[in-house]
Length: 155
Length: 155
DNA sequence: CCCTGTCTTCAGAAATTTCTGAACGTTCGC
DNA sequence: GCGAACGTTCAGAAATTTCTGAAGACAGGG
Image (tube, rainbow over all chains, first blue to last red; front, side, top):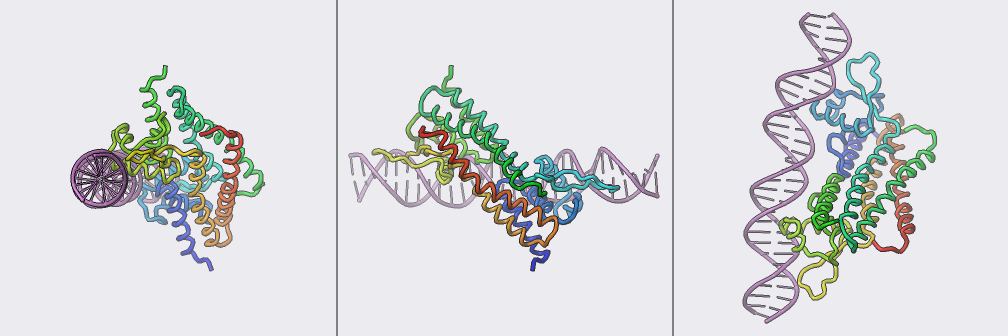
């Protein structure tokens, strides 16, 4: 049997795991709530009640997950409150975004290569630059391959 | 011209960028020092002096980068102090390790799939699980492809 | 036009992370 | 063995991050 208690625990556990992977605590809890709900959409109030967190921190967390491209506003049919839901393609989007910092690292390393004269440091930096350049080129193809393999089934 | 000032600035800049990507501050500074040096190896004392940080925090930072597999002890030829240097393959190692949290996420999501009954939430979670499973399988091949492409040249 | 319900913003509090400085081991030369 | 140089550990201080609660803004119904 899989009761509702298990669902709540599993959601909390996933949230904590995401925190361990670097995500903000409240953003992770909000994301898990969206992942685990069978409702079409959730409002800030729903989340605040369900997570036992203040309206303020929920508001901030929603802004984060929306800005990350994982959650979007859902058309609210005659409702006064804002409704939100997970976006399709959320995971490939997230993975793509995790690679955004790589742009910055790449730029910083390239600058390093130019700043040092010939020598071991320069070779080391050039190798690092090449690796991140390679990654940046491969990730889109990786995601596309998954999308194709998964075919038309919806997230 | 590329003076030594540029080198120091570029190193600091890369360290800050790595912090932005989630790395600990002092560990990032230590790593940058190893990246940018033309010396064969550095000691804790070198780093402490060069970075203007206490011996204590340098000690902790070294432990981190060693544990991450980016830096290793270098055989110290008749020296009293411990010498360290960057490992070959440091970057592919780092990238592989960045995917360690994915194991945890995958496990947490799989647990979620079992905890919820049939419905939208279950489909969503199953999709997420499939995506991370796919990633976990593809990353080693990706790294291998880079190693092969780069051929025998050293890091 | 006001009133109610809802979300957002922001200053301050709480918790967590990160750094330092001092005390303690350890190792090597003498 | 003894002394000195280094590195490590750990308690506490400092800085940063994260949450809350209250005040304000906005929209729609009455």
